[in-house]
Every structure is written in C-alpha cells, then in structure tokens.
Length: 84
Image 1 (cartoon, rainbow, N blue to C red):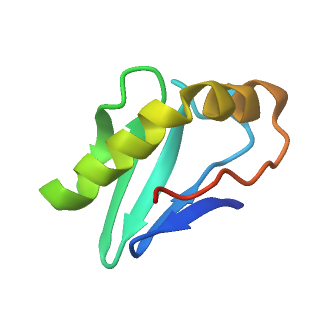
Image 2 (image 1 turned 90 degrees about the vertical axis):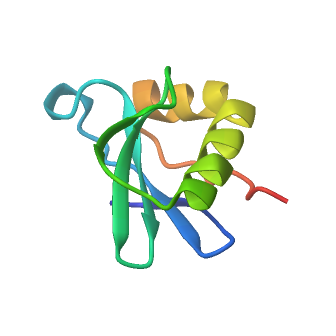
C-alpha cells in the first residue's frame, strides 16, 4: 500500500484495487490507530483515530479531495503535499 502523504505523525496510504475496495477511501495510520476514511464524505468507514488526529486528516482530505479521487480512479501513485 503506497504512502500518499505524511504529516504530524499521521501516515496516509491507499490501496490500488478499487474493484476490491469500495467505496473510494484511504487509510490513515497514527501510532497504533488505523482508520479507513471515505474520500467523498470524509467519514470513518472502519477503525478509529484520536479526535485531534481525525480532525487533521479530515482537514487534509477536504483540501485534497480532487487529488484523492484522481488517484483512486486512475490507480496511479501521486504523492500529495502534507498538511501545514
């Protein structure tokens, strides 16, 4: 699973087999916490993150939603800038 971005100790990764992993989502990893986040709604599908980490992930995903959907649809690895 390629790493798409990393910021504030949070690692963002995405699988590239969309036919096997719907709805479109990415994985956010923060220490021992792991969550799958829906790209379109930015809600947790599976897992959990501490509230502050989740807020940062949602903020980042809102800024990069078009890029995330493009990666999902084209299935090509493209790094996305971190949240600053």
